[in-house]
Image (cartoon, rainbow, N blue to C red; front, side, top):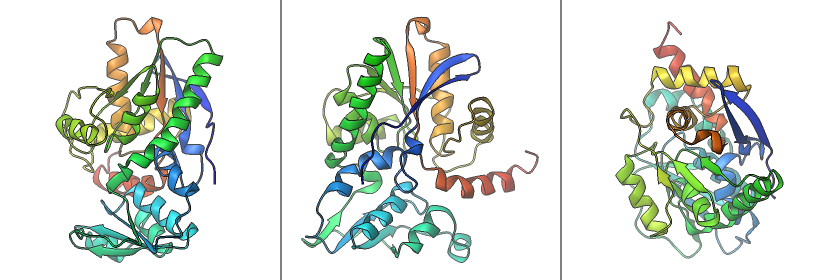
Length: 287
């Protein structure tokens, strides 16, 4: 299974031109940053392993993609979570439901400390050095596009969870990569960078407001609707809504914006939007 050359769309958001790298269109099961981060494992011979083990949140995009990977490779898949909401246990939906359909074994407990030789452990969110493989391919696609379009002043943005995608893109690109922290704070994100590479980090843009990951914010939902109305592109509610808020604020206040081209990398993860939209409509009944 190969992932190459997602298209790049030109859009206008609030009277500012942007380009969007459509990694959401790569594959129905492996879209966005998960397609790039897990590209190595999709191509690799994993017959020495019996199972894949990972951990994280109950509606993780990585969880679903790893469940597909395990099924494709004929491996068992165990996924550790700290807890599961009773409503989701009784009414499976989103990434959780689809991962269960792929025979995921969910373990509500602390992640075990030791792994057997035939167990492939992939840390939460795919923050592994093997992610370099797919992200170098993505970086080369961006460099080729920039060269073909004679773009020499380019700024690239994507929001970060573990920051793996932004970090490795910066390692392979001659352009500045911008990002913002979505899961933890900026210090958490810097520590994540340092765990993989100690230098040449992407630029972390400051947020004007503190947000808690997974919590519902009216501005996220309104940004989601605004983006779809203006671009006809559906973006992820967990990462992309905050990403666009931060990125737009940066561009609007950037003194030399007329000299630069701005590229946003779509994060994929649209399967989780159904559950998120239900939560938003329930909470903000006036929307």
